[in-house]
Length: 562
Image (cartoon, rainbow, N blue to C red; front, side, top):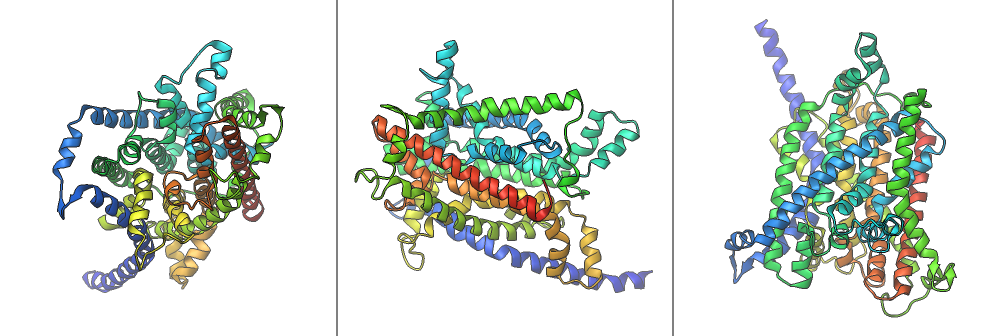
């Protein structure tokens, strides 16, 4: 027996060594990408703010934290992010179940509509909700109710913005869970709720945790929504960083706030990385077309109706306000604002605003390709459960771009990437690189739960039969992860279309993206500029909806899934 153990150990160590080498090889490109295009620019802007006469001024951190208004900003930032995350999960999880388990007419179109709010510039989201809940808005006209002076407007706008995160992240995995496992528990005497709580919920836990993490990070760094709906009363760290940088020109305070934001997000990601693995199990995944069926019974039809009503009121109504205002020209309803987009007034833009459509699509496609490549390699490297602390730390670091101020990243690009060998200030690729930074975390978080859910014994069996690592990936992992890969690509494309915080600082005047063009139009006084902003926002919604609908159709045609 001792001899047998002695003979087995060397191959085990050799296999483990090969596995570690392969993982490190997969990590090399993502690590280099984040080091050059994230860590370096952020470090450059922080150094610019905290370094004076060659010496670091770390005492400035205590001075900033001692200010009562800064402590209030920190408290409100954390509180509203927690409240927004909880409210989003509460409202969106029933929708995730409906999209995963029910098959109904118009499902693909509705899935695309649900994702549209996620790509809208946050300034547009804030403006749409202001039209609903502000002075002279729909609620004010009908019932005399205004919410623009309360935190509820911010919370509801965050749910509007992040609803699709839960639908696609949780619903994507839920659709592939074998329902027979829950049915088996019910046959053994468990109630419907007990079977769901003991069988389905533990399987969904990693996806729910990933969705909650992404929603929290987006709301923790909320900018446009809070700036418009919060007014002088409510301010997040992101808003305060922007104010200190662009209005007060206090880079020192902005750098301190960036460090605080970075440390807070890093701590949250560390806790997430340390707990999520405890909830991960090998799951039985099936073709999603096997799990979706028409609702049966009054309860399921009522649930479907409630979800459709929620989508109509919370998501479609704000979008309808934007569309209505885009046609509400001074001379009556018409296409006057759309026609104005084809002309260059020589003031706001160097080109006609309509050109932003083609520019945004080109940038978004390039950013999606980068995000899928980097995120796919990172997800493959993080698949194994025997990873050490270094790899678990890498898992957490991949999420940092969602929790670090986009304003900081944008300024960092301008400061750090303007000298050889990284002189990219005049290159078009600078914008897709910034957009891909935000897209990569979505690719990783969407693919990782599915990759880790694949039974490791399937990979081992393929290896024993002589398959190379590449063939194991192609024959075992790819069929399982193909759907998640398409969902991840859709997320990356949507995020790239709507990215505003960093792009606004690096987009060239002759090549603005749609969000940048909308923000510039909103920043100028006059009904014509406002109407053009609403028209351009409507075009952005249509472009996004068409792109996502095409993605749904490709996924249906080529994967055999709903």
